[in-house]
Image (cartoon, rainbow, N blue to C red):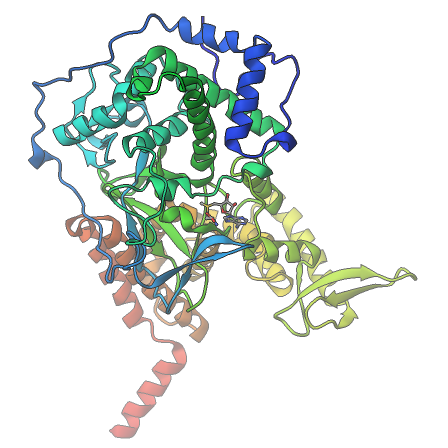
Length: 617
Ligand SMILES: C[S@@+](CC[C@H](N)C(=O)[O-])C[C@H]1O[C@@H](n2cnc3c(N)ncnc32)[C@H](O)[C@@H]1O
């Protein structure tokens, strides 16, 4: 019989134990547990756990004969922080940790932070690596991650009991066994946890076991203001849970998962043997259940998704997604923004936070949670943040989008502002700018919109580049640079770049614009974006007409200048992810592009230079 999983629809007689009556996670668990024990619903969960088979001796032994050859495991060490903060573990002293009612705990820049600066360099405190089978691909490009420390390794010990967990060294193996694996191994053998992205009951279980290994000490000591590598449990315990904002359905799912974990611990493990007082056992059970509820929320609200950048391919940046989750209490203090200024990258067994742009002094540090990025519409983003991450986003990009929805046009008078169409009582249509508060005729905007509609429908029939460029031109006259309409049309133009052999500089212009907009909006796609940029640059220099570019207009010259800078910047980015020897072929591209730059003097400049020469003669 298949086991039920958290969230499965089991009949609790249609009852939700309403959150209004809960004081906190512990109270909720106690009320729920007592209620389902009385009305018999608990029997369903008990039966599930009983059919898992009798109590078995958890695994004791591992494959002793497979000793990893450490030399084969070449580790790619992250760039160390320039100046380590004395107050915050794993953090650079460029950051300050603040707390406010509106934003909770959050980081701000204490001074200006240049682009590409590593500001946090953290080892996860608790890690959930997906089962072995999902991260082992074909031989050459496989990456294996130690389930204890998260380091990538080529050779590893496999747990003989569950055949799921792998460890890079004997130290990791014995540490995992002592602290948590002996309690989870049997459950992993029996697929007790689903390991789905939306199920946090395994992570809740692991967090609780981490707490138990630290004797549930939750006091934050004074010597280190935030974070302690020996015992990070107090900082995990202090993370956000949003418990009082959850709906009854969400709470019910969490309570069910916690009950299941608790019954598994009681029936199938020796976990409770370590507690001396047998008379208080019921209370201890309730406490652990409540803790599991709290940790479920911690896990859901604070996890960082680990992706595996795969360095095996020639360009090295193939990404296998969603292969693990980590709890890092320092990184967990960073708030979300849909267009953030930093990105989290996985490097060896560290999670690095790197600035994506220059961050002003006093500016808040933000990253993008999960896949919630600015390529989605504001409504889609809110659905994810509210349903999965359980908060309503207040970031500045959402504010900007709300404003754009309300007033989508670029103001033709003040240019910086957003204008909207309004109709007065007599049915007269005018434009009104929300920023400069001016009212003016909508004629120019309407004219551009009309032409754009014609171009769009012509393009849908002919797929002609000319219609598309005309569409881009009309849009750029009326919509702000970062609006969804612009993103859409740049994407169409960019997709077409292969058939643009005759117009290399147009390709360049739109390719760069798109890369620029996406980089500002979608840093979550940072590595794939980098890859597509590299591909774009290579395909550009390979274009038939590329080598023939000579005389250019000053505007085209500016575009080439941006391109050259971009090629240099991308090299820096690649060096961040890849060992030096891997990017040698990129030098060829650099040379080609420099050559182009030198030979493409804008027409006017060339004339001036020749004039100067003539004068000198
Ligand atoms: C990983 S924590 C970030 C640190 C958090 N401010 C704290 O005090 O612990 C995630 C939680 O912070 C809050 N949060 C983060 N970014 C937010 C945003 N853009 N809008 C609203 N709430 C946000 C939400 O409550 C979310 O569940």
